[in-house]
Length: 113
Image (tube, rainbow, N blue to C red; front, side, top):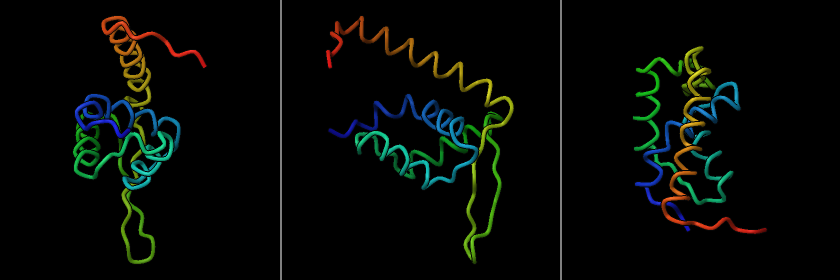
């Protein structure tokens, strides 16, 4: 099952911030592939969703960019700013709390492994 873009949209900033927190720097395609691999293809982030999110995070001062040339190709890397490093913890806590609330609200029983 691939999750809908509606579900992913509200969590994309948190996903990106957490990935950048776990990795020193990443470029866009690397972010999409990492998420795809980590979620066993359940979350597939399109370029049309990722790049506006990255630009918004940059405008908010949470990420910084660095350009590198690989041969003749330019690659733009994203990394957390000092503010982003602080904010990622808040965003993850907020999302975890939201998931707890949704679990309660929808009366979802935990799965036993």
